[in-house]
Length: 199
Image (cartoon, rainbow, N blue to C red; front, side):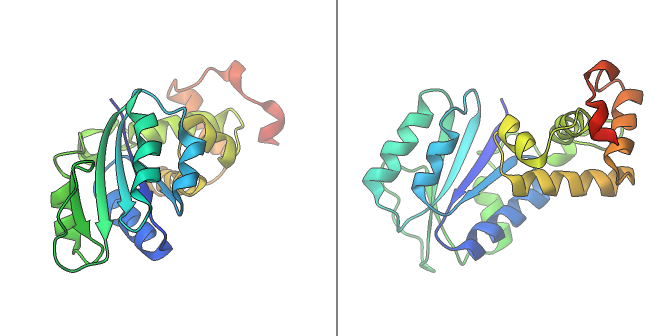
């Protein structure tokens, strides 16, 4: 079961900070949103483990009603992120709470039981994660960053991050180079390629 982290927080610096901390250790898809309403775009996600890191200042009734829609087709965990330095008492609707002022080690320790696999456990012989291979396949057949994000239910920011990691690992910067890599490694069938996209 694939794991997705969905960070919904009103402060971009907290959302991006959490995404950076988690993304450096775990090979999971990370979606960052600034409002609960933004979750509506992802309601078709099914068959995943979803870990929601939610701003505790959001209206709890609206928040939990929206998350209940995800529970129908996914395994869901909820972590409330509050602004206080001390531990807030968790309510019965969430699995745990953490402070936005927590250090990296505290955040990762808190999430460890909920995240199924570490990056190091999901590498291919080329050093690529399963998700990076999925991204290469879609790039090779001519998909744009937005189309890849929509197909994999991740944000464009996450797609760009995956593409940057792929470039660093393989040393291949062009779409045509990634396409050749995908063909040579039997990731795609050459007949699936958008020939116009290579020019």
